[in-house]
Image 1: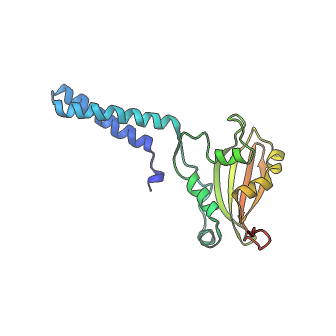
Image 2: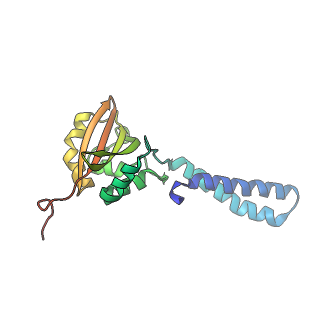
Image 3: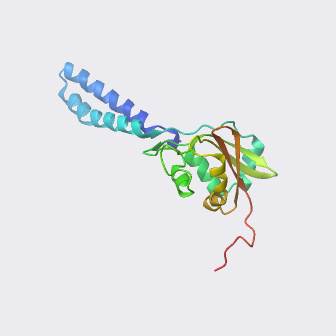
Amino acid sequence: MLRKLSLATLGISVGGTMTVAAIIAYIFENATINLIGFSYGIPILLGGLAFKITELKPVKPAKAPSPEIDALRETQATDTQKQVIKDVTRFWYGQDAHLDTALKKVGLGPSKEAQPVLESFYETEVKGAYALTLEFSSPGRTFDQWMVKQDKIERFFGPGIRAHISQPQEDVIELTLIAAPVTAEETVSV
């Protein structure tokens, strides 16, 4: 619930209300409310405005998952897939784009200009497996640049993840993270 609440909007609303109340109290010579309103209202308002400048809004799903997909998520989704959904559906402050750190680590977001931007996502089923598809606007990165990073993407989001990359239209990349059980060969023995 709280992750879907904009701290910027909350700060602006509370701070703005307190500041207006302080101005009205000043006009009617009520020193206590005036002092409290200005002392707390203006800093809260300024904090809300600062948050608004750096606010990254949640990404909306392209389509709502069916009950079958919900059940599949509960039984098959990896912790990473669940965390990606949590991260992209909440407000962030001070980030350039959703998943920007992950994209930088796999080599797809070295500069702000070439950074792919997550536009939407949807959950689906691929050959009986739960899949999370992330739709990126990627004018600064070609399909071939994405394909070169496919193995690195799988290792970054894995274990238990297969990555499928497609380009449904120009400058749009779909990265599908498919839940795949980890086999005995994939586990590292110590």
